[in-house]
View 1 (cartoon, rainbow, N blue to C red):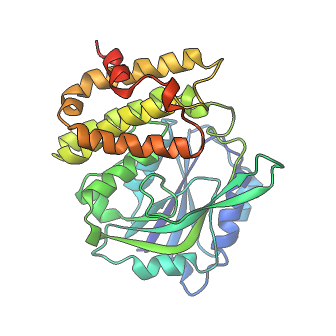
View 2 (tube, rainbow, N blue to C red; view 1 turned 180 degrees about the horizontal axis):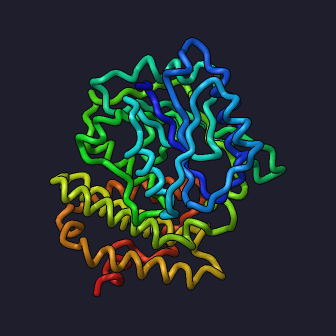
Amino acid sequence: MPKLDIIIPHWKEDENLMRPMFDILRLQRNIKFTDFRVNIVLDGLDIEVSDEFRAYTASMPFIVNYWPKEHEGISAARNYGLDHSTADWIMFCDSDDAFLCTTSLQTYFKFMKPDKAFVSSAFFEEYPSQEDGHMMLVWHGGKDYIFIHGKAFNRQWLKNNNIRFHNDIQLHEDTYFVAIVRYSASKQDSVFIRDPLYLWQYNKKSVTRTYDNFVLSTYDQLVKKNSALTDELLRRGMFVPAKGIVCRTITDAYCRLHSKKWNKPGNEELIKDAEDCVALFLHKYDYIFKGAGDVVINTGLNQLRDDLIKYNDFDVDSVIPFEDWVESLRF
């Protein structure tokens, strides 16, 4: 049985996006190549992989599997990988990701112990400069609980705690999954590696990069994820983190929808659609929001607002007060 299964969902992305991942994996040092496998989940029975790419992956010193399934979206593809994995540990990677160095797996393996729930590392994100398009590296060096990048999960622990991706969520599905892991694991259950071991590569054809205002245009999907996350936390009896998600959703919406970046001519309809989604969310969870208390709400609100003010993206004097805005959402 291998120590690690690497799951990569593949739909209509360029298959060659995966080459950097394979190129760095074949160079991994101080490990046995029998200790891990790469499993490419083909999200659609009609997804074709070229003979050239199959020959390329067949040349690897480790096992590469192709697992075809009916097209159901990225969450179902990741769950398929989880259900068919037999390794002790599992990593969920995107087709445009890669490990950062030739000792990445060696370092992960060092901390992947049976009594741990998950191991995460710092990672770099590629991002083009707005000035000249030069690719920069953004360091994610804190204990990230948002992205799936650079995280390995104890498969049996996931199974024991019934933690899966939500099949109905196709955007922000990683945030949902990581949040459930975070709130289900104690501090003693996890290990954070300060060294960056993983690279989130910039892919201009990625769904999150293809057009401006992506987050605002899909704000309903963000709210949908937060609603599903709140429901799951409540189902698990985790009222405190559920309350935090509810408060964060409302305060984050207020700050972002009134930021200079979003609240500008041409975005009126998008803002209105987003507010309608937030109003429905508030209607569903207002009993939690009202019971949270001013200290909890204002602490989060001030932190978010101060961050935007620091970057001159929020004008307090020209924005409706938070309490009045919340009241306008109620029905």
